[in-house]
Image (cartoon, rainbow, N blue to C red; front, side):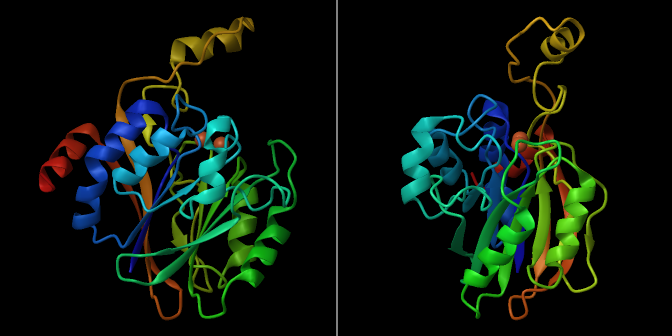
Amino acid sequence: MRLLLIGDIVGKPGRQICTEAIRGLRIEQEIDLVVANAENAAGGSGLTPAIYHELMAAGIDGITMGDHVYKRREIFPILQTERRIVRPANYPHDAPGHEVVILRAHNQVRVAIISLLGRVFMPPVDCPFHAANRVLASLPSDLRVILVDFHAEATSDKQVMGRHLDGRVSAVLGTHTHVATADEQILPHGTAFQCDVGMTGPHESIIGRRIDRVLETTLTYRPTHFEVATDDVRLHGTVVEVDPESGRATRIWRIAVRQAEADRLATLTK
Ligand SMILES: [Fe+2]
Ligand SMILES: [Fe+2]
């Protein structure tokens, strides 16, 4: 079976390319489950109920978030009632949202989705490595297919998580940096790993935001509004092929869909 994790969806351009491309991708790449990181989906930061439903309608089965999970308070009811979205598992117990959800893939296999936040160059949170142990111990023992989105800044931190969970989960895939890394691999005990699956949004930008604004503030310290950029929109993500019996990964590959390709994919489902 095949799982797709789509990298941080940034603003309207990111949502639009998802709507155009995901259904076609599901067909062409024979994807059984689509999970997307949506922490930047609402104007570049956070998620709203309307956008949550828009992403579900685009063909996404499950949503992970990140350090921007609570940027829009109106998402709290969705985080608390919906069973297709997770908050970081290494937040306090009483933080709004679920620390793990179990989804049913297209082939009917159950898949657990876990989100963890890194601690290097990021606001302080509980230890993601111990949180992973705790959440894994809480899962039904017959559940084999587990996808972990490790939302972290440092590649070293991500490699440590990959080795920590190797053989215990199907995939440890990174998000948050908005830049895809070329290190996709299957670790020795069968866990698919990649430091970062990249960004779904405008690539003519500084990680999704207008270049002129970020440059001005960086150089002068004059505050500006870091508006979402518009050009060279791409969908970035990674597909993991998993043996549903063992939960071990057998293949991993990156996908990068540019606008022309998204237009073609959109015609497949018309
Ligand atoms: Fe992000
Ligand atoms: Fe982030």
